[in-house]
Image 1 (cartoon, helix red, strand yellow):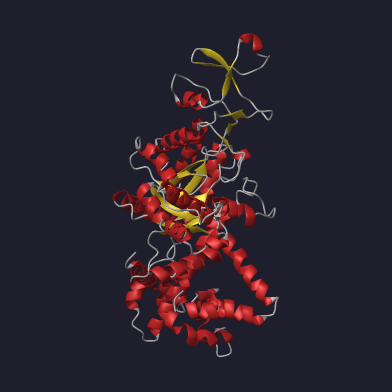
Image 2 (tube, one colour):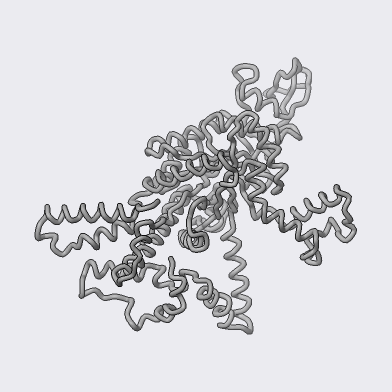
Length: 536
């Protein structure tokens, strides 16, 4: 936001000057300029400040997408504050702005990487408090990125450089976060309580799914059990009430449906009148026609189309949906959620196929014209295989020669660089643009990218470092790349706040300050190499 830093500085400067005048000589050692600088470097005082600020950004972005689908937004999932911080630093460096870039908090990664129980599957077994704790941690790191970059700018200003415009128009690293609350971790009261903690930590957008909370499964695994619409609407209401209670009036709710891959329900709702939501839900349940003589004691029966039917019940007590009803259930879920307080949709799909996603979304748009998706560009998909298969099928349908390709083996490295492979890679490259234009996708995210990049980079470094390359594996593969590419944490002491702390010590202690940034600090070795890319 333009001029926010300058406005904050001027306001803080005036406030401290007035306080000095009020309290007299007891405040003689307090510098209004230093205090104003510190206040400017910490623009957001609370998580609620962040939630209100970022909710307004999301609402603005949603309106801009409605006007032009080229205005889609993106995010990457982050499992630690440092990962989120480095992502947003890189976004600012490469794109010169954080506009349309968000953060995503994945329940999968919280379970796998942040639980005190150790690594867990994505089944809502981790501590619910781990979710708001991670949100708070992420924003602590983003606010520190602001403080470090602004501190550098103030230092340069004091040294005579003309950086006033950069200070006046400083763009924060704080961006919206879409935070996964899974299925709400219990009943609607539990959902409300957790949503409040997440919002207080800074979340402006909460994603909630329509699975049974105590039987929750990852959206890309089997065994998913959905809840009736009435139960899900209660949780949408719980989240909205949490936003309103805390004054985040523009808070965003993302309603996820797992019905595409879910074939089970735990609960049969009570229909109050023909055609109501409960009745529509029950119509999807698989039943078998029976006579009263065939029915055992304590069995559940329906009347359907004038006939007596018995819902198919598994030994575990769950009920089955009729085969082939999944897409109809998805559409009804989406329409119902949007008509009952949700702002955005999330549809879990079996493959990343723009045409298949569009077919569902267009049916929703027949009822709710401005329906929009948050879409998971998931690492659970084999993107290479999926798109090579799509291209193979398209080539075959167009009458092109595909005799050089074995459809059962399209992942083989021998096809890298072929016409089919190049076409598939181009479709992957344009997937987000195509999906936003054709399938109503407002926000594209990758849930688990930093989980996979961490594993990949450790694999590569370990192979060399513990092999013949030794220390060269680190220097050539990591540090030299950091220097060449201007990665901020090559000077890791500064990134951890050492320079910022030195300046604070000077404010507090004056000439008595014991500072870390002297001539014997080995981080000075990176000064010359980082001059051209001096950015947080």
